[in-house]
Image 1 (cartoon, rainbow, N blue to C red):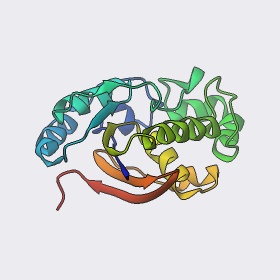
Image 2: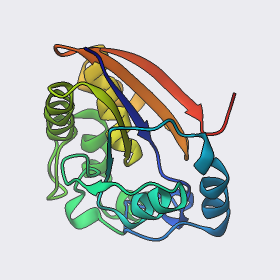
Image 3: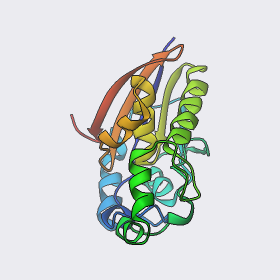
Length: 190
């Protein structure tokens, strides 16, 4: 039997507009309205999860979901960069930003590497596949990217080549560790 996983990226908040490493800020008013408007468009799911961030929890609430908190699909841990803008970090640590963008194993910020994120997300997906059925999860954009890298069997460096827009769904379907990938559709789109 097939497992279908719908990954929903959160609605936009201030941290995204500022290109800020997630500081767990709330959604903006426009993001809240968009999520509320998309609430009736989601298919029913046997299991529903949400990343622990405030913006993912707020998006899930506005979508009318009652998910179980799940630490496995949390966004990438950014260590000492958390809450800072990319511009601030690039000004202070240009060599570290360059390393982060080019080395999937980089942990110089004191957080998780992209390789570690992809491995963690792959383990979560493997666990989901053990129980067939439909899953909906509101997760950070970096988790959607990591899931796409895993589904395609791509190199971790492909992570930077994937864009995830706010309030879109990316669907994975498969069984026995083999995933098919349906790329991001706007929620509520026909």
